[in-house]
Image (cartoon, rainbow over all chains, first blue to last red; front, top):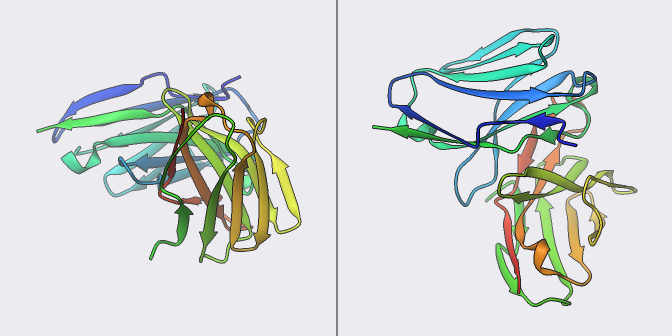
Length: 113
Length: 113
């Protein structure tokens, strides 16, 4: 049972445009959500997070939106840069993030020059 | 030096062999995790440990065992490797309280022939 789903295995975006990566979850007990970025031959690295008490969190070019009623979150990257090409994982946890994370399948983002 | 170090980084072995993947961390975190990554399945939790005396099974623990030798060390063993355990394995650490962010090692690629 996949509790966290990223339904797009890949996404291709032109440099300078907006990249939107989507994630859906099924467990209504999740209250903390994170995005990780992974380059080839490296481990995932933390990108941005959001608590369920918020519906938006912004950090530079990266913004995460949370729609609790739809159990959906999205990551917006604007403007997209070639260095953003990577695999992006969303993850969710319960109890304020202090518990173990459940990951989605990942979306491979390619930024084209 | 990396905060979370995995050894070996690459290993090829044969069916039935015993394999140990080791993880050490310098972050001083109590919590450590082992994940495996398969294409299209994202990161799946194998085992996790919230402190030296605490070991818990994750989603896919069958065929694996772990040992938490010290706060800084968490090893994963495959007692009798099989081909469908071919995957990329990640160790991660997490601080005991707080945002839930995981810090990953660079991964260990295991191939079972």
